[in-house]
Length: 299
Image 1 (cartoon, rainbow, N blue to C red):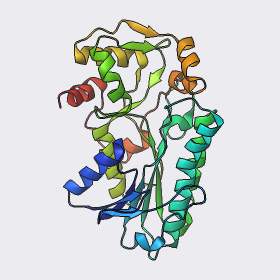
Image 2 (image 1 turned 30 degrees about the horizontal axis):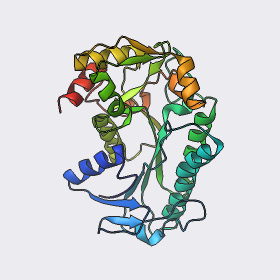
Image 3 (image 1 turned 90 degrees about the vertical axis):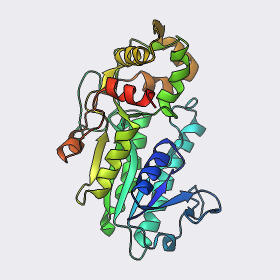
Image 4 (image 1 turned 60 degrees about the vertical axis):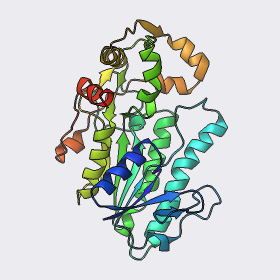
């Protein structure tokens, strides 16, 4: 299989690329600069950019689109929102244009997405049948998925990867939390009762590869572990795994004062289950948080 991956240098993309190559797949990395290695394909997906030459996708069987500016870095100013939107929707549209114009087109598009689609769920457990939520992030994800779905009329199988919080020691939320927790400065956020839907990096990669190989898997798939936890439960589990206390709390007003609108997303409750993924037959390597943290921190 020849797979093209955007965002291949990111947390998920680098792990996916390594996993595919370890099993003999031919991986081409989409880069936003002049290619400097045989495995790179240059593209310019930004507004007004040249996009991607359809000829560059000749021989590509599947595309995994993972690029996008980080959601939780900095305040959501109007300029920042525009950047977040362009990095997802404009890049997806450019990729779809190239895929549908290629001869022959790649057979599969797995496009990054997020459980932010559901908005605030409170204590309610939701799956892929739940409606779209409200707020900037839910609207952004909805438009992102629509941009990817535009490839379907060309006969391309499209699946949206609605990822939860991906746990990895090399980056993401867990990577940022390890240092303060190791110093005994771990803290729950807000009330601590809001739900966190998480997935280990091993299962994130495993689920993406499972969907790549599943010939009829299309539409949205929640990439989250089967057992979401509250923020307080996550805080205790991480502190216990590190053998450190975590008695502090970060009050909601402090977070809102520091981060503005984005704090609402960090304080939101997202209790999501991977119904379609498990129904399709995927078996989680780390279905519970304790085993996932144990494996991650043992490396």
